[in-house]
Image 1 (cartoon, rainbow, N blue to C red):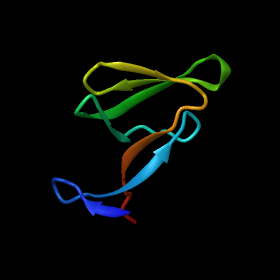
Image 2: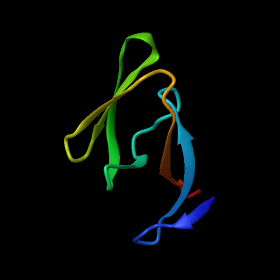
Image 3: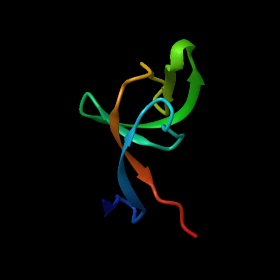
Image 4: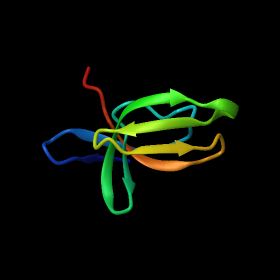
Length: 74
């Protein structure tokens, strides 16, 4: 699904796992939109996400989350 985001950028809704999450993905956590600014690999296929706000989230290898991903213009 593609939808315009505030500011005119196009985004798509994607399901992300530790293997597919990317910098720039936007996730709704606790009612707040959080953008991933950095990622760190953890043991057993888990990842630690660092958000622009400075908050951290560790996700298990089988965790599935929904995120908005800005579409890259060509």
